[in-house]
Image (cartoon, rainbow, N blue to C red; front, top):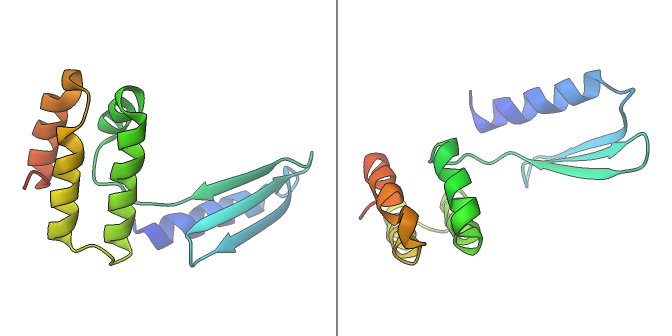
Length: 118
């Protein structure tokens, strides 16, 4: 499933439950679905591919929330074509070097398996 397929699927699924939502809009440029519930609450759903598995993301988020934001920013810049694959690997490796020591080895191993350890 591609990012576009997933985004379209989510939007269609949300549209099918129109009794829960008073307004839905899809912004293809930012890969974002804007949602307004019937009780007036607003939500944003952004569809972005990640190269790491869920356990790695959870570990980063708990141990290194600021570095997690930076890493996701690098991945987004790569996906937008602002960074080359090689530049993204270099930046991700630098970010990992700054990570909490208790998870650095695990993250380096995972990045190595993904080819992001350059």
